[in-house]
Image 1 (tube, rainbow, N blue to C red):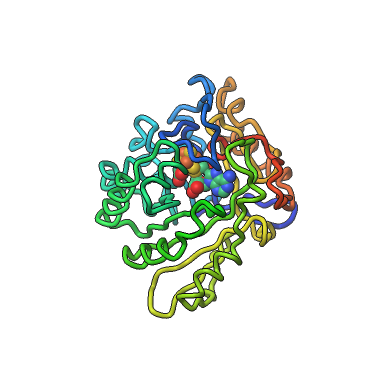
Image 2: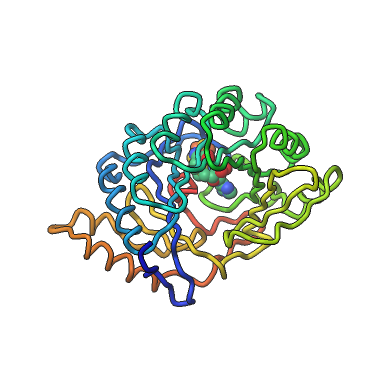
Length: 330
Ligand code: SAM
Ligand code: SF4
C-alpha cells in the first residue's frame, strides 16, 4: 500500500473516495429528487476513462476504499468495465451503493468483475408504499435483486433505509426481521436537507436515530459494537444474531471529527464535505492540455486544505445545500 498522502488542516487522513458515476436514475425517491428532474447533458459528465483515471490517482495518493454511487450506478452503460478496471487497483474495500433494481441480472457480473460489497437501498417492504416513496420503483425487482446479491457471494451486503415519520417508521420492526432472515446488515438513515423538495416537510418527517433505536428495543436488545469503523454510522448487534444494525445520524450525532472521505460528482467536482459547498473542479484538470497524473494529484492534494471542519445541518428541514443527493453521490 502506498503511503497515505492526503491529510487535511484538521489532521484527518482521507483514504475513502465516493465516486458518482451518473446523476441519472430509474427511481425518483421523494427525499432525493424532484419528480421532474433535469439531468446533465452528456458532455458535462465524466467519461468512464476519466472516472477510472481519477480513481487510479486517488489510489496513488493512499486511497484504500472506493465506493461507486450516483444517481443509480447500474443505469450507467458499460459500468461493468469500470468495475473491472477499478477492481485491479488493489483496494482494501471496493463497494457500490445501488437501489437494487438491476441486481437480478447484474449481481453476479459485478461480483465477478471484482466488486467486494454492496449497499442496497430499501425503504419499505410494502409494494404500494415502496412505489410511493420511490415514485417509480418495483419492490419485487429489488427483493429479487437482494436475493441475487446474496447468491453472488459478496463480502458484505447492507441495506440502507431512510426513515420518514408517517411514511415508513412503522415498518422498522419488519425491516429488522427481514434483515435477520436474509442475514444482511441494515442501516437506518436520518433524512438530510440536500436539494429543495416540495413533496414532504423534512422537518416534520425527521425520525431521529434515537427514536428508531427505541422502536427496535421493544423487541431486541441492542448492544453497541465496540470496534467502530470510524465512519458516520454507529453499529449495534442483537444478542441472537450476527446482523449489524447501523445508524447514520447527521442531525443527532456529529461524526465530522473522524471524517475520512471525499466525494467526486459525475461532473468531476471534488466535494470535500457532504454538508458544505466547498469543491474543486477536477474535470478542468482532467480535460486540460496537457493533462498529467502529477497535475491531477497536485490538484487533489491542494484541495485537502478546503475540507471544512464540520457540517451544519439543522433539523428543521431547511435546505442548506442546493444540490440533490443524486448529484452529490450518496
Ligand atoms: N441510487 C443508489 C441508491 O439509492 O442506493 C445510490 C445513490 S443514493 C443517492 C445513495 C443513498 O443516499 C441511498 O441509500 C439513499 O437512500 C440516500 N439518500 C438520498 N437522498 C437522501 C437524503 N436527502 N437524506 C438521506 N439519505 C439520502
Ligand atoms: Fe435514485 Fe438512489 Fe436517489 Fe432513489 S436515492 S432517486 S434510487 S439516486
